[in-house]
Image 1 (tube, one colour):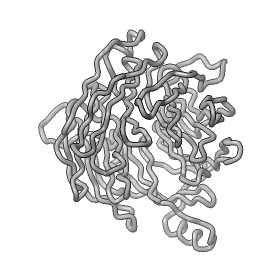
Image 2: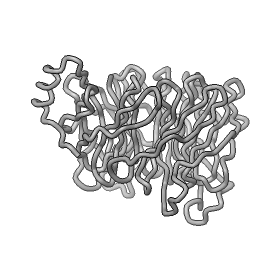
Image 3: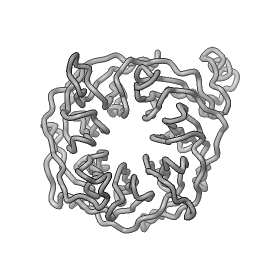
Length: 378
């Protein structure tokens, strides 16, 4: 893998190549070894190269990042820094964004409860953050104040059984991710422990979550729903199944806020029999392709998507240029995919053929300790 360029060399090459358009990228990490928090770097969309990363702000295990709609503020899941309190409490931290310097400034933190917060999203009105907790098994909401700071938690929805059939990993509910419906009326929470996608209504005025009826849809037994995405038109919903090595397609009734399972497709080659856990999922900006990462097989599965039926057909499985691809993101123009490989401490870039959806490794990579979340400022 080619080494990243120093910031000076990167800037000079960008000036020489007038078509270059360096993009600011923020990376969340585990701070269990050498990482100190959230990092930033510049990504050159003309050739897939990276600048050397720099520390944007110190933080404790900032494992998932989300911008507000204006990108003036960044919110991070993770742990609260409370002296003498063990185990650490789950919480969310708010930061203001200095895009020119590529720096973040701490605003405040609020507790969510339980252990470390797993996943979060900001609603479209910029009035609330919705988050979930894997081990404490709940989803919750916090208000966003006018200065971008967070208010105290306003709602908490606990998850309970019935549990899935896996006696090792499904011993309790495990709320793993939260995904907003395109119209900002509902939030879908994937629960690995119960094999369910749980549905709640949003009330941005009061920054609260309200249990919905129907309250959930069942996934195939034992698959362990992890992360999810909607199609842009809101007609279909795609779930990456961590334990099932698969992705499930659901039809979505936007008026009713209900889901119907249509199909489940493998993310793995048929001859792969060892342990694998599916991680992240994204729908391509043009709506024609879906991407899912495999940890164990250490690959990215690419699916063509039928826009009428919503159904998927796998067209490629490609190595992720590292190990344990925890998270990835796709640039808004749909031409690049960046994947965070946690266990090899690197982020690799792939070009995307926007006609076929297929990926091609650029050969470029950057070293960051235990990267697990990638967001673009553009």
